[in-house]
Every structure is written in structure tokens, then in C-alpha cells.
Image (cartoon, rainbow, N blue to C red; front, side, top):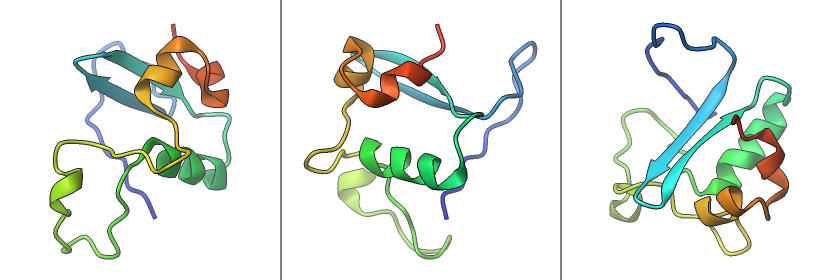
Length: 91
């Protein structure tokens, strides 16, 4: 199970959203229309690490952020619009 928790921002939409940010750009994905299994697949393709237990340590390779698997989706692909997930970008 993936756990995405963030405090509400004043004036922000309450729709389920995934925020990605690094030196290459910022992307917000509206996942309110996606079923859980699709959100789970998206998070996997983006390279988010899934801990088996909340107390488990995060492997060093993931401590700086997501690491997309081979064939996964990179932030560059999302921004360029070449990923099938790009249609969920909030502009």
C-alpha cells in the first residue's frame, strides 16, 4: 500500500494529487479519476519505493527521490508529454 500524506494548502484543491518536483521541473498529477490499482501502477512506474512496513528503512538509492524502473516513466517524459500519464497533468 502506498501512503501519500500531505497537509492541506490554503486555497488548494482537495482532489487527490501527486506532486513531483526536482531541478528539472514541477508537475502535479490529478489522480482523482483513477482507481487505486492505477494509482499504484503510476507510483511504481514513477519509481516510488514501497516499504513493506512503516518502520522499515528506505534504501539509500531512494533517499534522494523516486528511481524509475527500466521502462518506467521519468519526470522528463511527463513534462514533455510523451508519457501516457501526461494527460493527468494539472496545468
